Image (cartoon, helix red, strand yellow):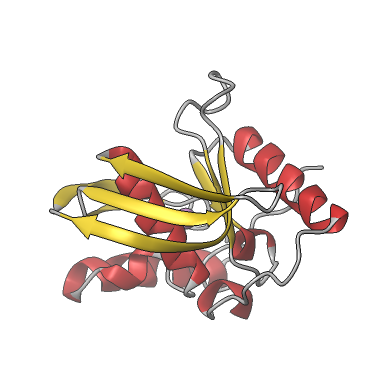
Length: 170
Ligand code: NI
């Protein structure tokens, strides 16, 4: 089932740290299925549970947008094992539709978490995948890419969002 995506500034769940998952239950697997469906429908390359209103530490990523069946990464309670280097690229977010900005991210990131069978998985990402890991991990800590911007860049986006909000377009 496709779930509605929470937009920036609309619900606390997007702006607060999420809880660790205690147990992988059928309900939790169902949630992850919905997250994957919602991500593909958007379409987007990543989605974190708080973006569908659930304050749990889970994200899904698929750089292939569903075209490659081995491309899907779904991790529960992910943690960074390693981060290295730096890249500067444009970035967007399904919770901030219509906006993007250049964000500094590590160029390599290794993440460890549980898969849906409860098995530990370690995944290494370079370039775009490293960026996606950092972006989704930020969501689990209540941060959106806009929060990573400084000064006028951040202010411009926030002001435009407020304006859209006031006119009922957000
Ligand atoms: Ni996002």
